[in-house]
Image (cartoon, rainbow, N blue to C red; front, side, top):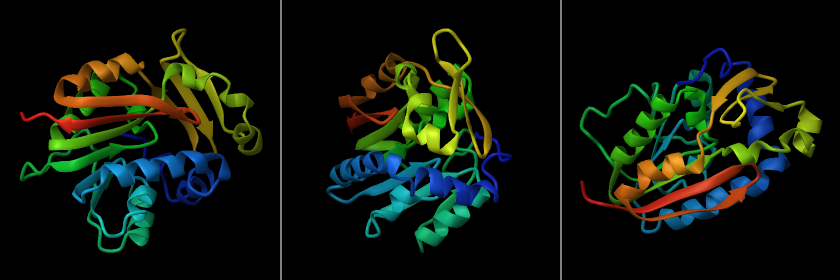
Length: 225
């Protein structure tokens, strides 16, 4: 799903300093953890897709958790932070659980779907995440919306780290992000794209909160298939 040339052994420690330990993202991570705490009560089984270094999973050590990511370097750190938690190294686009397993919570943070850089591929991934959510369960996505990109290059994080956003289409759906790992080619469809896919399968949606440049999209109450 993502380029292994970016998410490599050399990038992993820099990724942590930029996106886990940097104070710019602390409000977002704090909000993520609070929302996860609400979604995980009562306790159920949770799958974090494109889990990276497993920061979110590590906040809930008593939770039944699983992670999947394509990057061996990221998963090495995730295992260190989450001893005993099962991790799958695979492209989430291609992977299927052999036993048809489903989860009470499925999550996807940091707009990881954007790396697919193709609208049809993103649609199929979101449909898969819906399918992996058990009846009664919840789906939690972080969305980068086009309007959320405006002004990123003027913030303190960009000034300090040199990270930059550049638009690749007039509607701002196609864009790129450059940091110490290289150039990340991204595609972020608008909110309505996700609502149209997800809404028919859940009893309630909330996408009212944006923290930093990402919108928190939560669907509750997966309808029976």
